[in-house]
Length: 178
Image (cartoon, rainbow, N blue to C red):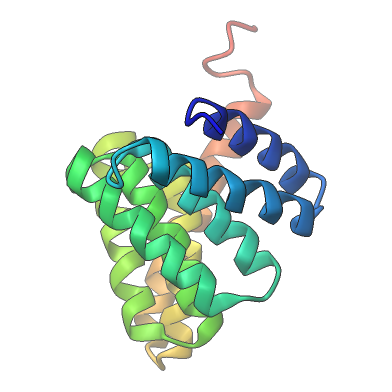
């Protein structure tokens, strides 16, 4: 029961998660979280990663309240340790927003997507694929909130990024191919 085993269990759980074996992944992540919380500081990034992954798995299992709780904790740790403008904080905010959207909590989901978007644009660039994904999710929430014009602006921005990215990939930009 050494804390050093926690990341290994977490990595194995991700493999099960990728295979859509949610129950097996959840069991390993719960065990990893227990080891991490006993062996690390409760505000450790390893603990945050395990919490984040467990939140994703709980969401996939339809356990949205538990997922939200885990993802809030992960976000809080990442914000405290990494600061508000880190891409891992943006990822945690985005993932929490997905769960909030699935629960119908559109006001907070909009806030979390907006937070993620600001960091992604600053750190990854305005044309990053992650930015397009966040814009798409934000557009969905805005439509649900009866803001069709604002939603349209976000969706159009996302489409432009996707079109530009697809074109860049097709002609080999940045790949060294000619």
